[in-house]
Length: 77
Image (cartoon, rainbow, N blue to C red; front, side, top):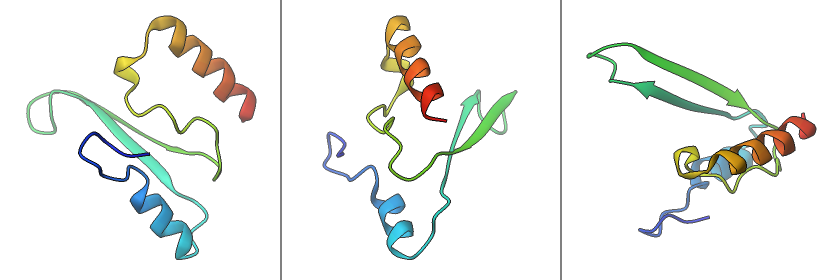
């Protein structure tokens, strides 16, 4: 999958897999920034080949889409 500027969103994941890594964590944060207020961060490790890779920005999903992805992702674990 590529961004609008042509960058491969999975470049580093593919690189790590080819180097033999089998556990890769995705990390995200939300808040006002590390120096200006409360921040919440999380890391998630999903199996390689997990079928939820098409979502690149959850903020662009509608509530029904979020619910559908939740149900699909929950069933895969």
